Length: 538
Image 1 (tube, rainbow, N blue to C red):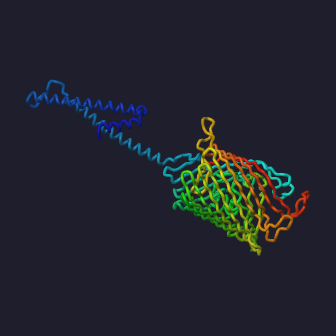
Image 2 (cartoon, rainbow, N blue to C red):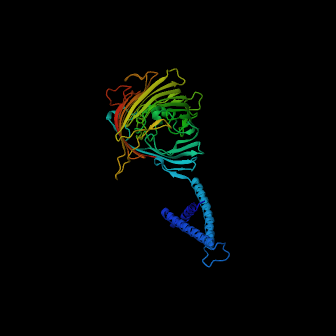
Image 3 (cartoon, rainbow, N blue to C red):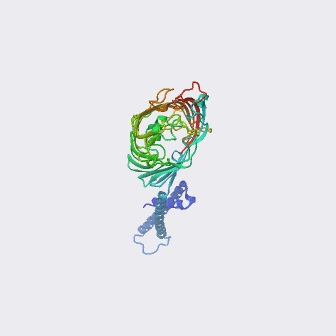
C-alpha cells in the first residue's frame, strides 16, 4: 500500500466521521500537504545520509567515535516509527471504514422502498419480491334527461320519467401487489352504484394469481373475467361514461365486477388468450344453485409500428346452467338480457330494452371486435350475437344481436396507449399537464359512438298480439358525442351528449288518452341526455 493510498483512505474515513472534512477539495488539499511534508522529510533524511557517507570517506576509515556535529542519522528513527504507527492506524481506519460501508449497504438493502409510479403510492421490498400499491377510482356523474310528453303517456312501464341528478358511479378503494415474487394479489372494494344509487361496500375484485410460469398466469377469486376488447378496457379508461351496450350484455350475463371465477391466461406483446370458468356474482340474490359458465377470449396485435397498432379480438361465452329460482326439481332458471341506455344516473335503474326473464337451458354468446390507433386517431368496432336455448319448452331458440362503432381524436396530439396484460387500449397521457404557471392544457379528446342492440325475436306488429314464440325486448340505437379532458395522468373530466331512440312494441293496451287507442302499441321513445363525469384514478 503506497503512502498516497493510505492517506486517501484515512482522509475518506475522517470525512465520514467529521463534518469539517466532508468537502472533497479540502480533503485533497490536506492530502497534498501531508504528502509534501513526508516527501520533504524523506529528502532531508537522504541528504543527511549522504553527508555522513561523505564525512566517512573524507576520514578514510569507518567512524569509530562520535563526530562533534549534530547527529542527523538519529533523526530518522523517530520519524520512521511515527510513519509506521500512522500506517498501522490508517490500516485500522480503513478496516473500520470497510465494515461501516458493508453495514450501510446491508441496512439500505433491507429497508423498504417507497415510490409513486404513475402517481400511485407503492411500497416494495429491496429485492422486489413483495410489494403493495394503493388503488383508488372515484367517478362522480351528473345527467339531465330530456324526454317529451309522449314518453310519459306511452311508456308507463318503460322509462316514462328517468330521474336527472347525480350518482357516484364508482367509488373504489383497494390495494394490490406481489407476494414471494411469483404471486400477485388484488383486493378492491366498491361503494358506488351501477343503477343510479350508491350502495354499501362490496367486493369489486378479490383474487390471487400465480405468475411463476409467465407468459402464463393462473387467477382465482372474484373479479371481472376477460371477455373482449371493450369489456377488458379498464373502468378508468373507457372512452365514454359507459361501455357499449352490445358488449355490456355479455359482461352482465357471465362476467362483470365481483364475478366468481378461475382464469388461465397467456399474455405477450403480440398475443393474448384467456379461458375462464365463472359462477355467480358476490352478493347476488339468493340462489338455490349458482350459475356456471365458460368464457374465452383470443386477441392479437396484427400490426404495429411507432405510429400504428391494429388489434383483432374474438370472444365467446357458454352458459352451462342458469341459477335455480327454487328448490323444485324442474325449477325455473331465469336469464334476462338487458343493457343500460349507456348511462346509469337514473335513480330507478330503468333499462329501456329487456327480454324479460326467460327460462333458459343454455346461453351462447360470441363476439368479434377490432381496435386501431394511428398517431392521435383511434377507432374501434364490435359485433355480438346471443343465442338463448329455452328450458323445458318446445319453443324455438331465441336469437339477438348488437354492434357498435366508436372513434376518437386527441386534439393535443397524444395517442391512446395499449396494455399488453389485458390486451386493451388505455386513455391518452398528457405530454404537458395542465398548469396556470407555465404549464400546458393537458390532453383534449373528441369522441363519437353509434351503438345498436336488438332484443326482438318474432316480435310481431304494432296492434297485434305477440306471436307465441316471440320476444318484444325492443331495439335501442344510441348516438353519443363526447369531449374528454385529461389535465394530468390522474384526473379526467368528460362531457357526453346522447341521442337515444328506442323502438319497442308493448304487450298491453295503450294508456287512455293516447290516440289512436290500440293494444300492443309502440312504447318506445326518443330522448336526449347531457351527462358529465369527474374522475380521479390511481
